[in-house]
Length: 232
Image (cartoon, rainbow, N blue to C red; front, top):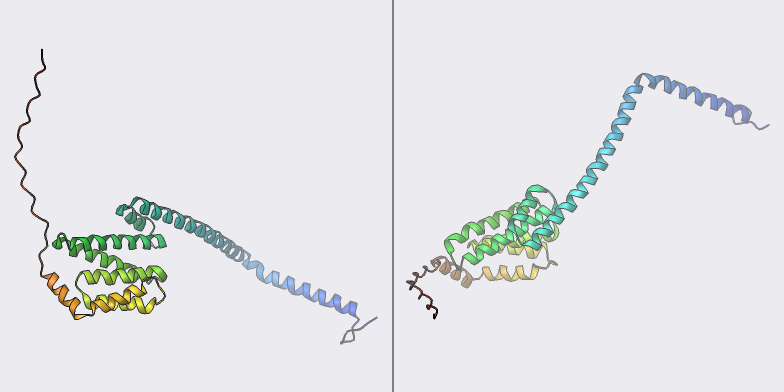
């Protein structure tokens, strides 16, 4: 019969260690028994927390899917109100931020067109675009959304005549997104608004009064001739 290093037969040593392990287990159970309810509550709480996390994750995935569906529906319909609805119903989602970007782009286009049609109405739309771009950037986005919003804000400021801010915005696009789709265009715009000739043109344009043409007076209507009397 083999002995272990203490001179105790192996079989007896295993039995002794087994008994010692059992005693330690029972001691642990005795110590934990008064706290059994608390332990069960803790385990139950952990299970509930896990279940809640799974449920929230599933709901979050469903919400994101619904938000993108609403965003794409807005794109197909071209209704600005649809994008505002996405922002209000799905705050904090990527679809809401892209909806905000589309709304900013629409305001920028409207404001730029009004500059050459009715200049008094242009600044509010351009400022609305700048505010929307700024709100997007305030959430510190990344990637294409950040690039588009930075470029759009620079464009809105250029249209408002804020050329120094516009130049810094274009330069930021070129520096922060050198491989982006707008990097080359941003560098050209930054160089253009920095020219003295450009600044002179904006000073000249700011002095121009552009309003819609006066409506033409309505022509006097001549009474229509009565229909010919039918032959008897």
